[in-house]
Image (tube, one colour):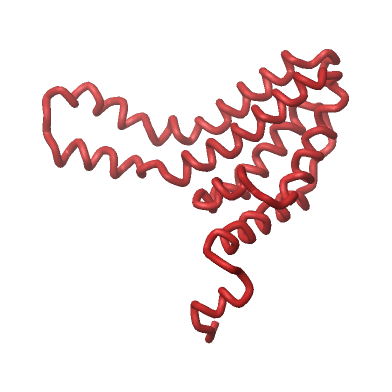
Length: 171
């Protein structure tokens, strides 16, 4: 960019403020994602998939997204409430549903952003031969397929839990 790295500090007092601004930017971009029409479970799945796609590239920003001092996360919660309002949830169950959905999206984004690649896990076993780890080899062979299915499995369980809390059936 032709600018000195320290030039950033003209706009941000410290590293935390810079990372907070980046987190707020990602959250703002998520706010603009459209929520499709359709049955509530499908809308929740679509919202969570879009959120996951937006969060996955930025696992280092997750602490700033969860502890933001700015209201950038409010539109996202408002969107969830709009989707969940027809469910007839009590205030306590609505809070639980929003916390469950948010922690599912953030937690999986952190997991995906920080887990070791499957090939690296296999290489670790190959580098340290130990008969006690032999039972792990078939498991490791199945990890790529398991990781491909993991987000949808977690997403389905989250939506199922929210639907169980609902007083009004999904339409």
